[in-house]
Image (tube, rainbow, N blue to C red; front, side, top):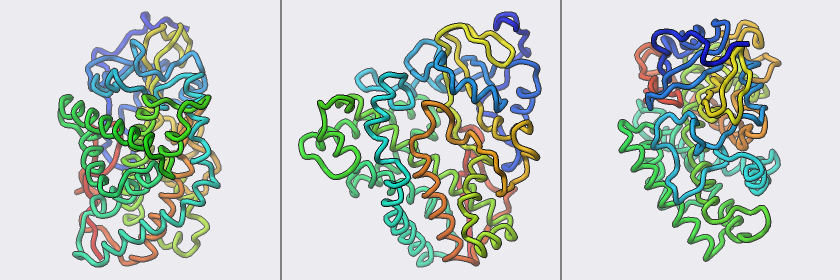
Length: 404
């Protein structure tokens, strides 16, 4: 086992995020990291270095080890950019907490994300999806599916779940997009402050007049043991909005692209709708668009992937690589909906994604409905001509022109 300081690094560690030469292929930089005998380092957009692990077993081991912290305010935590830390007056979100605070906060909202609770929400998800397919069919015959469908549907679903007034949803769509795609640190910081400020007011309003939604119900229980206080509830609302919108929107877009590009697969799913859940799971493995929630900082010296990581050093669990690890997934670059192995698309351990049942349901409803109601839908441009979010931490499409 080598000490971190003794590992000979490449002259220039690869920069993260790494571009994909093909939307269906693993970035070459991930393969190079995975094929090294030990963990290597990468350079973050902030310019700082962090360790990166791309092997399935290493990523899973790190995510299940409480010697690695999720607290993004700890020195050494591998933030992509410094502006991504919440302003000092607000709390970190669920993904940025460690036990016991994380345990209590997660328990407070877990009931809203159980399979039973999401099943009760499913008819409303279907209504929102049908509304936007109606708009699609009533409009021009060539549209950007990201703007017209993939972005607004999950935004409306998460806004309804947490209790954002309908009139404010356009603000959320624009501001969350700005935050996730900020061209400069200053733009990202402004978007963060705008969203956190709005959430602060939203929580305050619901504390005064509780409403029947996730944030309203928690606000009404303020002061009870285990219920987040005002500051923590603002951070939680912010996290739920971001996690429940852009990540799902990206998978809807990429999933639609893949199915439009593979008509035989699409027709087989329409012929046997019982296979849609398995197809959704494979889409999540195949693209694995979100992985920065699997960032950690070592609380003490820890051995991982052939090196000793020093206390205070950051590590990224690169699940894009882990979910293409041939030691776990036979023929990993093939899209195969008959796989039995479960991926790390929703993480692992105490921080495994709280909203995984919601995400799977939204993806199943949106993609099934889209292709059942618009069976003649087709790409208006070749996959090679599409523009992808290569330099963003969440992979996806900038636009998906379609016609019918």
